[in-house]
Length: 372
Ligand code: SF4
Ligand code: SF4
Image (tube, rainbow, N blue to C red):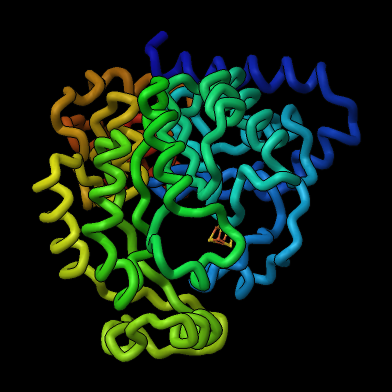
């Protein structure tokens, strides 16, 4: 049996062990939760540690998505969340990237214990390469909690402004964030500075200062990220001194209520990247790039890749894919594998979308399906 098939068999074992551990009520809660079926983006499956966020950052879109400004822990217990993920056909042990902190701050007072339990429990069962993004001060407790799960967790500490506190009125002091990030990094955690979102008129103006402070504190890498706005976010940013004229000129679509519209920022990113590289930082274009780098993986899952080309792609042969297709009950005519892609010709009419995602996630290569 090949290694890829082994991973799917291992997942079955996890599921049956958890099934024995959980009662019917827990199993129902987990199986009806969206974590049990949501398709990950290439950057990974986002795992919600709480509902809502009390930091009310001016650029945050979760309030436009209907999340409240009061936080409560996510309603699944850690082993229920693990079970939900194990049910998800797109979650492949050791492979699918896990991202904590997308729609809430994970280490809020109300949710930190649960977030750390999720990270520990999910890693223990499924070994998903872990990443967490946060604005928390990385105390010794939090750092130890993170390391008690995936010891190679990619930790992203967000800083987009030092001086403009109205943009993140309730989040911890950014100077303290950088200081504690440096300490956690010296203590052995893989911490990167997360400059997302880049806010025109604010982040670009302060970028050099933020980077200098991060370098002084000992951080070695940085992730740059874009801004998405809604009508409400645009009003907030105008109030707090962003260059809204510049933002409006860069909208990729008409601004409409709570719809999130991406801002074109590639020139801003290029400028900040040059400054960061001059200071010796490794610059990642995406959060997942930082995650695969930290975990020593080569990744060509999407057209931004390949990423982390310093390491070799996992050796995968056509026979590994053929075994997996047979295991999944898929009829195929031919399989071709390169370092960056898997090409499969399927026999007859078959549902391809799900298979394409599964092959991509399992191999860190783009899967391209044809029908014969
Ligand atoms: S910490 Fe994150 S989730 Fe919370 S308000 Fe700020 S951007 Fe939104
Ligand atoms: S190729 Fe790079 S950007 Fe694309 S999913 Fe992989 S790590 Fe992310």
